[in-house]
Length: 357
Image (cartoon, rainbow, N blue to C red; front, side, top):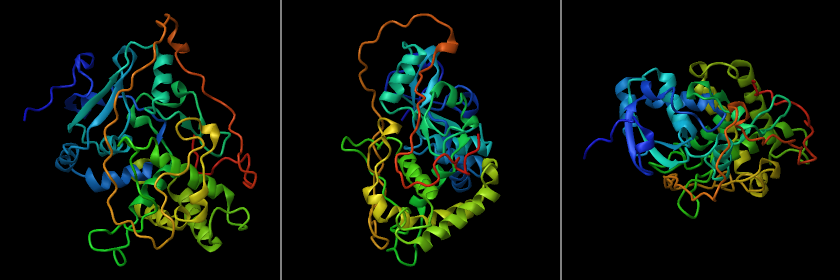
């Protein structure tokens, strides 16, 4: 089978086709489509799969390791998935590794504000981030919040925990070959076979909100067991002191994995069954339940998380021809006031201690 062509003129690529290039030659071209990654989750991938150049190359050659992108105005490619994977390669320093990019859509004919709107409307761009004066993620102006390089993505500690709780192992209890059978939740695909948009970010929001709700009373806590709640709170506060705010390579993966293990009772508890994400987050997350919920601490998940279908290019409605104007005005104004939707959250107005602007 012939190798994909080099990623030269992305305009000439057809939707659904791939190209291959050294990461060194793409790392300043490929823009992210979200504001943050979980630094500890990235370091976990780095230590697992990217410690040497041959290991990193073998990982990036796997069939599911391609980088899906949408071509934006001025021919700028925007990554629509695998931000943690490519961040792990970026931090490894093995930039001579060949990576495969897959073109999903060509929306280069749109103005930048039309492009950002289309990206958010079709779940290719996460339009939420943490504002300095808010304790939970809120809709943001993506032109301001999302950096232009993978290397400049911010840290979201809760996104790390949401990823790691799905990797919790119980080798002594789980059947052979099913060591993560008691993980926090199960990843699932949508009815059309595609990935549920921003799957882990939804769980990250829930965990963050539960943390802010505290462990003082069963009337206010999201946890079924207050002692388990306090054990997690203690572990997370230690992470705030020792890890949060540090670079990716300085993250203590074992300490983060320990904290994630303590989150399993929350993820499998009563509140997770009934929880819905706040409407203020907007589509596709607002008002939705948590995906992949498994009830009961002893309920075993005896299947591997599925590989969901690659995203497809949706048909856009007719749009007016964009007017020429200063690039400073090319952004959508999606900022809005994020109200505290649950009255029992006593930490209203507090900034999440895990937030670092």
